[in-house]
Image (tube, rainbow, N blue to C red; front, top):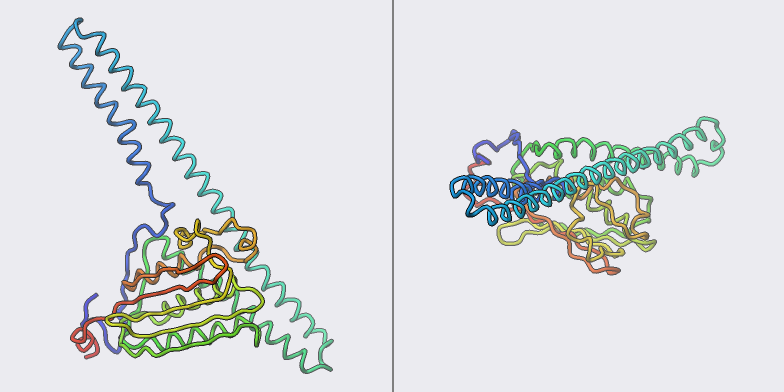
Length: 328
């Protein structure tokens, strides 16, 4: 990014991302097609030309080679077709699951909002101010959930096109961390989560404030979903050498070893029955990864099954000279 593009006014940067989801890559299909189909066809054609040149003396050998080449080509074609059909079926299943999950995620808060609004409308709660306050709090909380889901869908729409638009300011990320914590508090009932925050970062960092809020909010929501009744979540933001580190740690059920390499794939949801009960469309971590990559950072998960998870985001801090130039 150009340092002189940053200052009091944000610089709008369109970041192109590659390979957001391993399941969207066709590299394996292309390799299979090249090795299993194209190469045998080229070889068989060459052998045919040689057979014409040599005449009948090499016919037996040539015919044998041709048979082998055509057999390999047929097998390669079958494998390629199977891979393509498998990918198509998987994509269709993921899309179906996504629509079902999103429908459920939207319907659940809408049902709660309507129920409490109707109770307030009928006047049945007028004699109990405490219940009126609880009902209003629930409506606000469920509305926040709806807004979060809609934001996720809009963010993923851009990320799925390998385009993430950032409005960059050079400033510490502490304010974005605070905003994420405030938004998360609106999504949970008072006292439901033991949330601790240790925010010491002061390094100036070129970042999109709303993007960092989304990153942390998604990590907090993910931690919330996969903790039990005794919910404890810790947030840390600190400077280390030439980077800003953001951590979200929970005391939840952890991530199975077989799923740890796939949790950032779009639409991925574990097959584990206990974890599958958690709601969600399977986009939160994929969106988080896309935004982190757009900032030039990295994200990783440290987890043990049944012992909680620690998500670590590392964002590079520009050299002091670049920061001074950007701020001028």
